[in-house]
Image 1 (cartoon, rainbow, N blue to C red):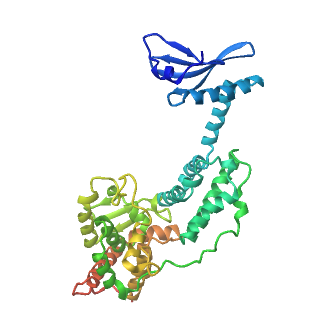
Image 2: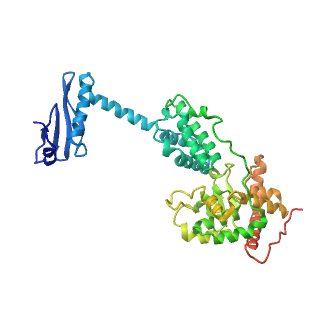
Image 3: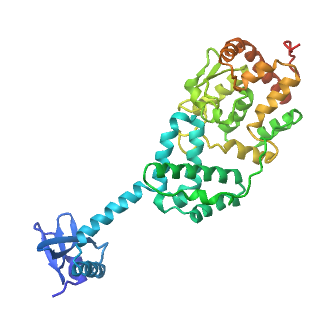
Amino acid sequence: MPLTDTAARQAKFTGKQQKLSDDKGLYLLVNASGKYWRLKYRIAGKEKALALGVYPEVSLKEARVKRDEARKLIAEGVDPGVTRKQEKIARLAASENSLESLAREWHQAQLARWSMGHAARVMESLEADVFPDLGRLPVAELTAPLLLDVLRKIERRGATETAGRVLQRVGAVMRYAIQTGRASYNPTNDLRGALTAAKVEHRPALPRSELPEFFRRLAAEPLHPATRLAFRLLILTMTRPGEIRFARWDEFDLERAEWRIPAERMKMRTEHLVPLSRQAMAVLEGLKPLTGHVALLFPSQTTSQKPISENTLCYAMGRMGYKGIATPHGFRALASTVMNEEGFDPDVIERQLAHAERNKVRAAYHRAEYLDDRRKLLQWWADYLDSQEGGNVRPVNFNRAS
């Protein structure tokens, strides 16, 4: 008699394994761990059993469908057990060679020659714009139209430069896939000229006359307290936003009032020592109760292991009314402009901005010679910013370059 769903449902383990037969080799195996569908079959003179699922997740009706599919293979001389193993191996290979898997492998291979900030930006862009739609796709199955659809989504939100960078990064991943034998063709080659050309613009900066209004908006905008302090530390230290994002507490010598940024985090791959003004030290004091218990000065609100997003400060400035008018990076240009107008030594300003010095001997000299000058420069800058924020006394530069 064929098995009924009622009999399958009511079957219980009574201390001894039992088999409830259905038809054409299908049976329900009942043991201490549960109920399992099995198909008994014979091929090449050997008797075998094929697993067809767990009851009740797989119903009696579904088990019979699976049985009939397996019997068709057996009638053609194909062992369904071997076929299943081959399919499992193929799925495993596909997952190991997925676009996301290859991209992470490629990313790991580049870390030795990238700065930490750049490496983080690359992975963040892939995680945000590529992996959700294409991450599970076997890398050999990536086509130009599939990738173009993803790039068009990025363009539609107005991020044309980001679309171009994502295309370049996926192209590098595909070249790596070809080099390692996981793909034979790079579909990004077919997308040359397909994207909207990005307009090249310098990062806009505020004019010095706008500083009082900026500080008024900074105080009024409902920002996370750490974000507000990140703006202040960025402006006071003349550093890049990426250097602020990844700043760690162990890089700061509070007794000497210095911030030593490691070479791997600097654009020019050279360690940079930043003297800290009294105002910068006050920022750190205000930040300590907020993030002093973790490694990063400005951790993400979702996980303390990662820094704030590269867009955090940009979006905040947008909400303050500066979208298209000024960027966080632009404060470096503003500081340089003000200091040059005030007659400070251009070499000291350039050294504080950590711009490249091609002559290595001269660069080493500058690092040592200009530290005291840079400390005075940054203290003057901090006092000047105070005057723009509402202070009554404008600092005097007693060391104007002649």
